[in-house]
Amino acid sequence: MRIFLGGDLGGTKSHLLLADEAGRVLGFAAGGGANHEAVGYGAVTEVVRSLFREVLASAGIGATRVTAAGFGIAGLDWGSEEPAQLAALRAAGVDGFPVTVVNDAVVGLLAGATEGWGIGLVSGTGCNCWGLDRDGRLGRVLGMGARVGEFAGASALVTRAVWAISRAATRRGPETALTDAFLTAFRAADALAFLEGYCEERYPVDASLAPLVFSVAEAGDRVATECIAWAGRELADLVTGVARQLDLTGSSFELVLIGSLFRGGPLLLDPLLAAVRAEAPGARTVTLSGPPVIGGVVLAMRRAGIDRRDIDRQRLAGSIQTDRSPVLAPRPHELEEVYS
Image (cartoon, rainbow, N blue to C red; front, side, top):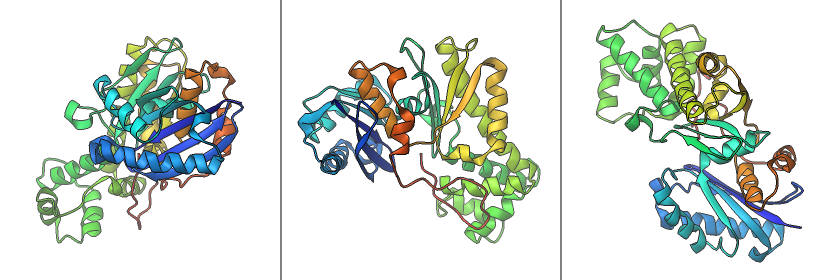
């Protein structure tokens, strides 16, 4: 029986999964972040080495039993980075069998797409979007966020909310309940005191405040609602760009939604899907329910020649218990951390 290793190396957490070709999970391991942009390649090696030993031990096998491996890696944005990523994995002991590395958005897509192709849209702390057509051709955005005008994860949504608070404070825009919500969160005396603390980087204004924006919108604030709708439209822009690259705008395809921001519900999803379907009416949404590491196993299986339609994703997903990310939903009393 062939055995496959899947990996999902993220910014805040990493998962390794061993499964056989029938979709039976043999071992699972979870650990810290392994995005080289944040921790460096040396730390990537250390995280993967520890997890690889753990997942092999949990399965009761040695590394020589692994047939192939597939890794989705946060921060793997350019082909020029692949040799360094593969070297970091080899140094961790992931060697002696074929290893495929892709951006982590691709394994999320493979984990959720029932036909093994479509478009995967990520919105967690940050955002990304990659796609595969039926022939395996890749389409993508850059994954570089605000530097290249790509939005919106939770961080960008919170920044957009601060813009709205600034506009209200300087009379360039309408009043908004976001102001009082952020003042309360940071115990600031007034809007200018909050904005001073924000601009001087004394206040930790980050992705963890996204639930607060949803909470204010759910209470009926039009400005907060528009901030979330803006995020939806920006995410749709990523999707339509990839759909154009892959000539999918006139086709029916699965749009796999990956990441905690999508748990915000219709406030985000309605404007997103309206904008996507205006150009790609055949898009069918799939919300990723299992961990993206399943897509790493799928990638490894495909490397070994297993047909994408023969891979039992549901069986894989049903066998794994992971520490789930906090649900991103309106919670007026909590400021939760949002993970990609």
